[in-house]
Image (cartoon, rainbow, N blue to C red):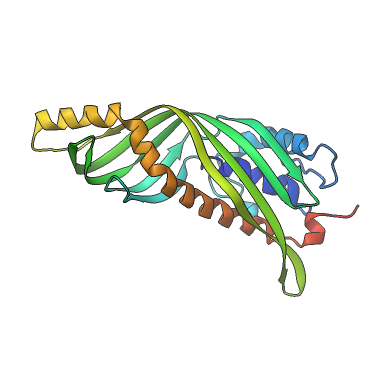
Length: 242
């Protein structure tokens, strides 16, 4: 989920003017401090994000299922059932919104993010061979996300609706990363211990290799859920004149 949770909230507070749960604070599109209103709404809604909001098709967001990752650049690694945990401990560093342009931007910081999944690897890391499969666990002390999204008008059944897409989606500035892979070289204890140390000591390299695929998967999943929400309402319901 990384910044999926915040992006979903932005969609909710901006784009829902129909029957919504009482715990959602709706921001009017003409609010002169739209960014500040969104930030306040996100923080108010934080306790409800973990369990999801079924009435608006917002799924459970803790943990966030990233889907499978396949890295084929400098490494050869597949990770299935990849999940991110503890994503509700986020800080909004910056947020801005333009109603006239249907454009929104934000910078988020997540701390103490935990990862889990199942890996298969057959590669070299710093000339050290890595082979095996098993559970992947890890922890990211802090990580930043930059997102810019834009809406456009589309026609559905003769009515105006809004469709969203990302103009920019980047994972940046991660710190204190540590991954662990159980099951490396199961038939050679000495080699397994050496390989485990290599993984732990070079976790930043592993994350850097994962980032492009991770960005792609998050972009797709976030866009899908956001458009599920906004397509429930017409443009007139999303941006009321009064």
